[in-house]
Image 1 (cartoon, rainbow, N blue to C red):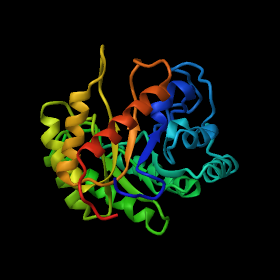
Image 2: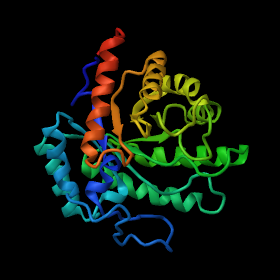
Image 3: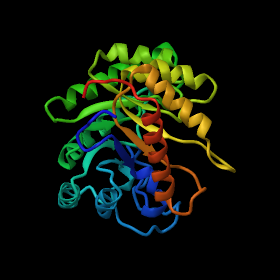
Length: 286
């Protein structure tokens, strides 16, 4: 397994949404409220406690969904950054969970709002900030608009220490054709977070083998059925990453009611990937 700073595994706070409870729907839409809601229940832990929980389980990378931040005040952001440093947990990515750079009516507003998160990401010590590339259908006009707006966002992030990345997610990017076109237009200014669970089988396997060659990070989401983790699907997705030569970190995305304790699902996926990599080693440079 390749040696990476702080290891090869991260956990997204999305994988702990039942544990964390309240969400804050920060949005560029003035009609949406960021007041806390509890769609997954009241929760049992605070975000600031998660870094120590991760470290205790041998994971030293974290991804934070923007809606899990209970406050955007500088004092709280500083306390959260200190908590990560105290547990030797690297903030791999701040996930900005709203906005649409492909929308004809609101793209400029939404990119301006996304840009406001760059300073928050930098204050938290995040390496990357993942934004939504677009939610509209992949017409030439919508793709062009998204590319222009994302290029502007990347320019705003220059000098911040935070790299902008997008994901193979939502209607704008339904296949490698659109994903590769967008990355080509952005010419390295914006990176790729490849997600194993956003496209549907069977087409997703060849799609992942195509795009994961360009990925910097990976959302390693597993599917579950009545019997538990869908091992065949997960193994095949990981094999596509191997075929593409992907050598970056895996963010463990657990999104299933199968386990009452979300940590059980997270650590099961970690063990599965570790076993896969040991069984099919690939020679890489560190």
